[in-house]
Image 1 (cartoon, rainbow, N blue to C red):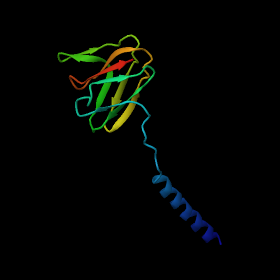
Image 2: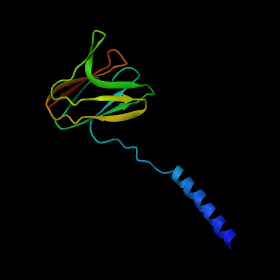
Image 3: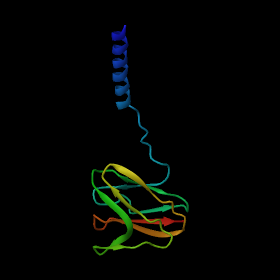
Image 4: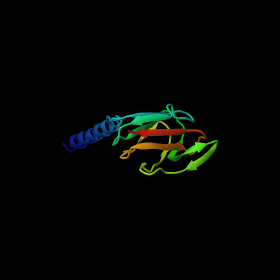
Length: 126
């Protein structure tokens, strides 16, 4: 009798482990505008959004990016945060995403990748 109970518990433990390892995960991104990143560039370097919206930055490739406030100008990085711009300092390790925002102030805001010269993003908020 005890052997059957122990075997039953062992089978149940194995099944539980298998089910946990195969669990379904929701990988949906938040709703809203998106900007995709390639190897060393934003696939679109400018986006216009409405006040109050956020942007989902998506790193489509297995390349690291560090996105922060500022811009590249003539090959020189200029870290700067415009008044009203959400502060941002996000490291992407490749094939991942993160939200930038919300943008609660109208204006034009600049973000750049510290690792890739010329990789600039302009966010226009209306």
